[in-house]
Image (cartoon, rainbow, N blue to C red; front, side, top):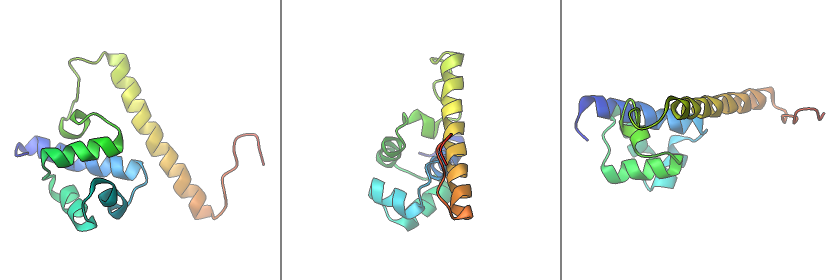
Amino acid sequence: MTDDSTVETCRRRIKAFRTSQGLSQAELGRQVGLGQSRIAAIEATGSVTIAQAAAFAEVFNVPIDMLIYEHPSAVTDPPQLQRLRQLLIDLDKLRNDIRKTVNMLGRPAHPAGRR
């Protein structure tokens, strides 16, 4: 991919999806068949092949356009679906933050209503 805005979007999205799913660069690399250093380079430059972008999309369980376009499917998706997609992304981020906080406290999280 050579369009500067596409490259920048891809770079940011790959890192955001990786961190929101709690994956290290090495873990993501194993899942897509790349080394940790290549994942670091992709997150720094956004330079990926279409095949690599497709592999990332599969691991993240999102359509490839979510990785390469700033406003994916904005024309075809109704606003409600766009909002739902953003809420799910935000929910994943919150879930990851909760896990990190629980790990910092050094004790397991208790399900709601159970202690």
